[in-house]
Image 1: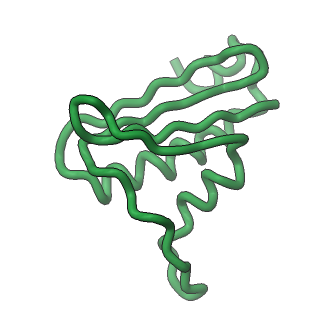
Image 2: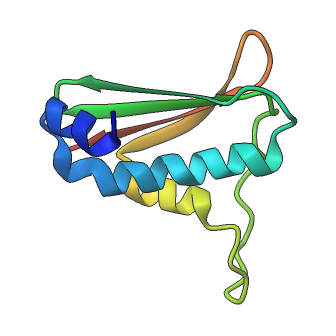
Length: 105
């Protein structure tokens, strides 16, 4: 099943592009910065909130760095913050971290 079909079934098809971008940024950080291991994604719908949780085996991120204008990297979490109603990172009991977001509409 595609994201579009799932979101249409949930009645939130207008959020597809934004949520795909949010997940892409977080998932890319996990691939680039976490040690090898499983990366999982969970999406959930609750009322007028769509939430996501991406877990990876890496440690918590360091605070966001200043972004240099001529570099193409370093903007991912700023994009997540701009498109999400709320987001954050939590350590996981089995090690690693979870990066979560909530998008209200």
